[in-house]
Structure formats: structure tokens, C-alpha cells
Image 1 (cartoon, rainbow, N blue to C red):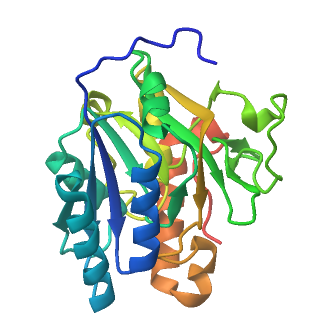
Image 2: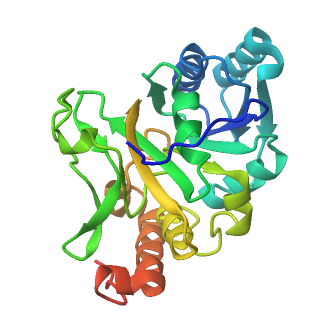
Length: 277
């Protein structure tokens, strides 16, 4: 546990930003899980439609907006996909003092999850809080990011989840970075850092770069197992490791951004640039 968990304020609002492109059923499941487990906090859900085309998706979005009323806002980002730019734009339109970035291919499993995140993120020395992510089969997908063999690595990835308190992925701790598949940041921190770097990290590594810049400014990046989220990693865009075969242009972008990360933060990984594969 954090040594100095701050006292909560009662007048804050949380904005949960969920970008999507079609995948209506998946989006519905995600939003329903957010609401089901939200608890008694003030929050809004900002759905950012990045050029959806399917009628079924429009029907799902209309249903969600009708069911949850002012709790859900739908915005349309009519530009080519750039994760960093899209979320920077959404934050400018969001109301919350605390921002949660949440992938549409996720399902929240923990009750009072927003309250648990705020308890940690409200500390002055904490800038970013990430959560435990599980693959659909129950294995660990994310318990913080660190360095392995000179590269960015998911800590404890693909291990079977456990409720044992001594399990390393069940210990709250400072980490190098966390993934923005589910990540909370205070607005003041996000704005002080200028948001995500949309020029150099439009597709990948924008969350890692953001966390590293936050650490350079003195903010801690905290992983908490108190919040658990199921994640179907990259279900909307396709896994980055497949880009080489399925989408050569996107895969080249991924490699270019990987090189940019090491060019900027090479001292952390023990190298300046990784050559493209």
C-alpha cells in the first residue's frame, strides 16, 4: 500500500475517455462494466467515435446515450487514427479533474474502481496510476511496465493470476510505466506534460513516453492491483506484432515509434536506438 494515501475531496469529477471504431457489442460491454462497478463517485463517460461505419454501432451508441443520459457523451473525431492526438483532443473537451483512459476492448471487474484509482492518484507526488489487466483466459497481461533485456516489458506477463497476497503482481508499487489501456492521470499533470506526444507516438508507446516524462518531472507512476480489468488487447486495431504481415505500413509506423522511444529515453534502456527488424 502507499505510505501516504491522501484524504479524498468530495467535489471532484472523473472523465472516462473511451475511443472506439465500430465493435459495438464490445463497446456496450465496456460501458456497462464501467457503470456497473463505478460506485458513488461523480463521473462522465466520453465516447470518442473515430470514423465508425456500421449501423449496428450507431444503434448501440444511441442505446447507451439513452440509457445513461447525461452520464454518457458522444463525440466524433473525424481524422485518421492517432491514439495520442485523439485522446489529447478528448481531454480538452472532458470536464473531469481526473482523467481515465480506457480501451473499448476492456471490461472492468472491480467494484468501486474509480474511487480506488482516485485514492492513489490524488496524492501530490503521484501523477499516474495503472491497474492489473487480465487476458480473457485469466492470465496476467499487465501489472506495470519495466525494463527487460534492454527493452520495454510487461511485468509478470502471461502468468496465471492469483489472489495470494505474496504474489508479486498483487503488490502495489512504483513502476517505470503503465499502459493507457486503463490509466488514470490528474488533469494538472496531463496538462503540465502537454498531453501525449502525437507527433512521435501516434500509434504506440505514447503511454510509455508519457509516463517516463512524468517521472522526469518528479511524479510517481503507481501500479495497483486493487483494480482488475479484463483486456482483449488491440481487438479494434489488431495486435502490433501482426502488423508486419497484415498491415505493413502500420507495422513500419510501430517500428519508427519504437526507435523514437529509445532515441528519447535511451539512457533508461541502456541504448540509444534500436534498429528496425
